[in-house]
Image 1 (cartoon, rainbow, N blue to C red):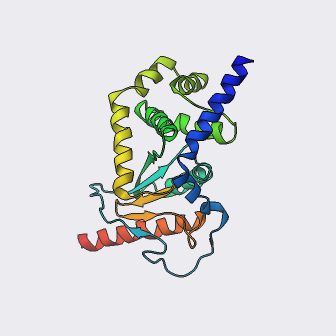
Image 2: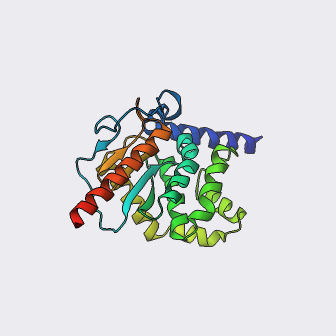
Image 3: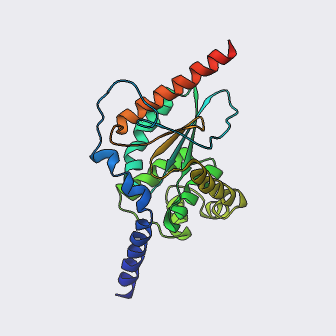
Length: 231
């Protein structure tokens, strides 16, 4: 009986922590429910995308595309495979980076988990199964123990995970992700930043499919500007 009550308390704690991420996740409710995805003319700054006030300087031959997401966000989960297909199609011209959004201690924990996968070089193996475990499998992850147990369940070494999870490298990347979101003023997820200066997110005129169209437009815009500068 005590064990059952403890499990219920853990689930309630996770639910409460998730609510503190409501600024990001609730805003993203528009992502699937109230937006218009029909193509409508040209893309306009301020309506279909935003120009970032304090842009990042990108030094790369490819166009940088950075996604801010959260494992606790169901809209990010639904968008993930669609985005993955788009990234694959654009692989020759873009450099894709995923960055966890941190809006609460629970989101921070899950973000630390994502960065642990990256630190271990196993993001491709564990990212989708972990997303699926939360939103399709109803799994609850409340601490390092439950996260490392999941890693072990899928064939990884538990102590290797724990060492990476608590490493200086992961802590540094977690802080960097938090600072980056603040600098770029990311207020909801999923959000996409193109070349450090354009922010694409859902709105009354931009839905999930159209979001990809806007991203296409901005990538081509950057490539065209680069070509003109080189000529």
